[in-house]
Image (cartoon, rainbow, N blue to C red; front, side):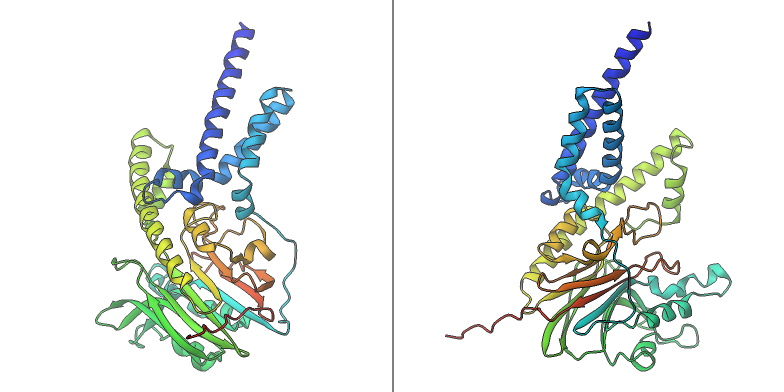
Length: 384
């Protein structure tokens, strides 16, 4: 009887490991599978860290059992090297407040409308002032904010742009407004602030929905070199409080699990479809840039996704260069959600990186010092 149980258990583990390996193999193809068509592969990519973790457990199990099946998780992990390398950073460097000569300090943050819309939930208390103080302390040269909120009704909400242009020393800015609320009394969109002159600006619309922000760019002149700073906010899954509760309640009952799963799956599928289109469009815009690019923003997608690999291309992910660990930037749901990025031109050297884990927005900010001394400027084309 005991022998029969062992045989059944062994077959179960073998089949489970084979199925998991197939899922991992599909997830490895995510960078080349457009989620508009292959949305189910994108969801597998989202779960890649968990699947790799389970493969490691299988590996330990097979090694302890001295089974030849240990080769299966080994091959699977080796095939996943590209995703693992994009997901996990191995640097142990520490942050220094002083900026080196020739470096440009860039900060990006989804500020969630400066928390102003959450006042009522806290009885009139807002994190806005402490958030502004966090930004002030970074001493960045370039600031890129998503979900930036500007008020023209000072009696109700304080205006925010003036805090940077007059009080923090950022004389140049470009605000790509996406939403106008109450006839323009309240404005929401992406914004770029700079201590260096901005010589040109523009925006690219990434969708028709009012909930989709744009890509804003500003060409900045830094010590004689022109750099295109780009910031964007790609399609959100649009989870609401009920969805978050549904995720927490999964497993409580079959009915609740089924209802929550259907809603969550539908929203994920829709978001992956639109992000795939937006990533392709944004890549096309980057390819047309006359200057080296620093791309920042909230991609709403993880480093194992089609979106990430499409937008990263040959650019440097500053977190992978100088960060450490997983680098979570969205503080809800899962510790694996690094969905905010700073991607720099290959000729830019990343000096240092940090991610303050401040709990005022639902996202964490990111700051990087980028050495532009070796920045390659494109040669003007011969008109002849």
